[in-house]
Image 1 (cartoon, rainbow, N blue to C red):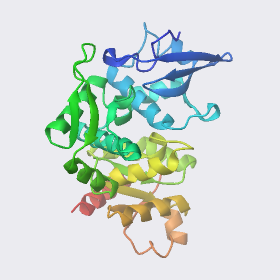
Image 2 (cartoon, rainbow, N blue to C red):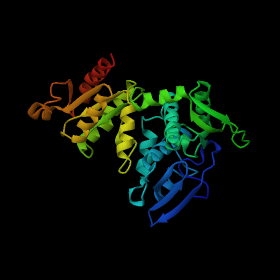
Image 3 (cartoon, rainbow, N blue to C red):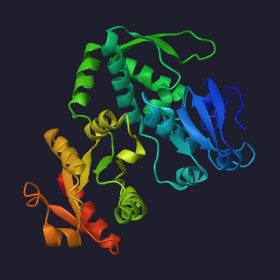
Image 4 (tube, rainbow, N blue to C red):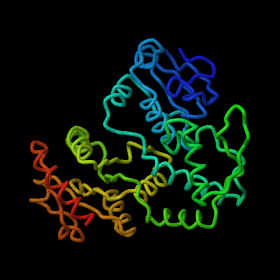
Length: 326
């Protein structure tokens, strides 16, 4: 079911070594500790179904995508009662999802940020990249992530030396930003870099809005080349503040749904505005017609949505986003 040194998600993609242990938690769940994917729970039905060696529908790219999601959700914080749970439904969503791994340019920016964050803690070069590095930045495998690091070195953004490892000939060590790299790093911290997606600020848990967003808005914008994510795609309690700021800093634009007067959505929109990001406000039509939104935003361009008219909303939303980009 879960064998030694084999994660049921990443399966040591591209020959990357990983340390894995598993612990049964009753009749229906197993806890997995993978130094690539992180800590998570997986249902036994998923293990014998979509994750089985003989009947899996997850190709390597989909596995890398799920590994990336799990790593983001468990990075730095994963107590037992907050672990992500991989179920049959989770896997079906990954298989059919329009989501993709971050672009190589986005992965490179994340790699530079990772190195900069690590070096700033001790002002010491990184001896070796950790096993989860490729999963954290969204690369399909470890070797691809190493090639990105080598490219950053060729662009004089990173200093690094070849590790001369027979097991991993692309590996590098003693990694730190150059002065040019630090300048790019600081630009990223200030929200000046873009990563090719939009961020959605909204109230979670509203059945109508969640369904409208998942079934219509995300796939509809994806067809227009406008990928959007919300905080549930990358985080959960415990890392929410830092991850949220990072996602907004890296976004090309922000969609802020004000249908519920959610303070968090207003704060996230304000944070984005402060960084100079284009913010597009959206609101459920009947709510806006009756109550408007806060006086600081009710004069701003707001695209109205009705759950039974998704196509009309998407046409106006796409046009508004494109106008925001100039």
